[in-house]
Image (cartoon, rainbow, N blue to C red; front, side, top):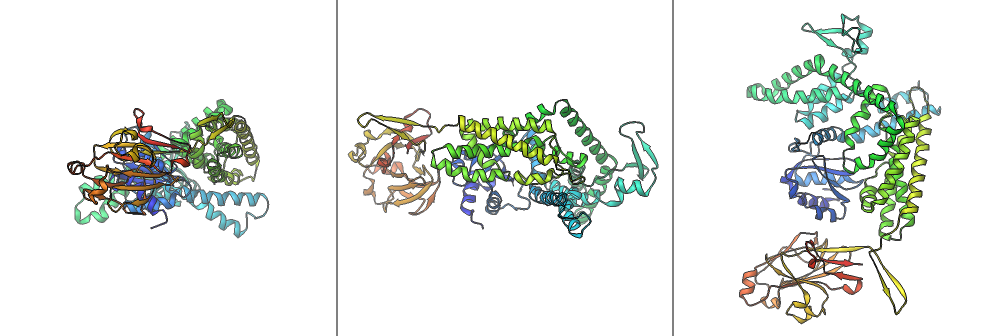
Length: 636
């Protein structure tokens, strides 16, 4: 178990337990759950955890945003939930009925597992193109060939990798999917090989844009030859069809020969159908889509770029930017470059500039500390910590970031920014803008100019328009000064179900007069105490009738169950924790028998007190406000 064991336990517990987890994947910063029932997840508790940035519900997924160390948290969550980190799924079927949710779920499930190695290989190719353009490495040298093989291998045999991940997503045996990808990349059946070795038997659709020479036949049926290496769509569709065949044959084939007959029949039927119908149709379709996108972009590259730049941050927030990944990959594999999605490039740097400007301008020390790692992550292309931790809560900086990104995107569209290699993120994406064939670096210059545009606009607008929020300002007349109150606060959740009453109405004068501290009291309807904050149990009285808690923000809380119940010597109380335990919001602390305590002659009215209230500006009785979910709010 890793160092995030405790965090992982709390995440599993608060998404509804391991039995509620249908499947789990992760991307650069998020745990992406498919839950049996999202209503069982405790959003507020998860959001309040140290180590969790926020919680999102998008595309049928329950997303817990962690940050850059998500992979390590993911491993611990998988181990605690009893999920194989290879499959990370008990049932990969998305229960959402929305077509868009299903599509995004499939795309993210297929591509997320390979993004790390895909990016790593792309960076190797990008830096190799840079070194070659600078004359540091000769294209004829052994060094170049080896590094090129390392960088280019995954792109050449992309169908093999996608065959494996597609199979896992569609419930097909993974090695069947892997073999489908291998067969699609078999050199002897590629159009490039056949066109050199053989003369075409005849040509289908002659005289049209879909004219296809036929070099091979299968049982008299024409095979339209394609180059399947580096492609995306054909292998995904064939694996989908293969998953249906596998389920069918699993029902029909006798148990005795099922072990080898089911995969054999699945491969035969799916691949033959793939070569005759699915592969050619998918290839033609991807070409049509690519040409259509180029035509739309040709209408106004500037407007198209502005739209991509302006909206990209919003797409990231909702996690639906994954839906555009196949367009990006398909463009590079069919055209040799992408200029449709590239206007998003300035977004990362606009976000970083906004965060740096906030860090310079804010007087909030906690916010300033948060800005430093967020800015560093942004430079390297990971913006989720900045988005969820800073921009989204503050709202106005998010709008500024989108505006700056849109202006940079318009420039990128106008200047025709291109990326030739599926490469790194942030600053590591620049080498991918070098044309590996011609060593031309025009796109690198365009990319750098756009980054300057995005960062300058974002930085200046943030300095002009950003202001720290001030929750309260109290004027003290006799001192003729203004006391500014930090916006920081902590909310105490309801620890017990029941009727809230003012502390002054409690029968014990020590509580009623505020001698012990400020707070409220609860007349319980259920004999269960839950933690109102995240923190530590600093005191558990030997008689179990009272619990002292210190929150992670330093608030000291006393929960005193009943009046004079110390006399019961622990009878009718059942503690769920011990002194020194770390606790989270909603953790069960203590059970008590309301009926038995009252029959013994004691009141069960329970004061909840902030004992170190004098260290804070105010303790607000939130529980007296209609529909409030909080009992008390401490203003720092």
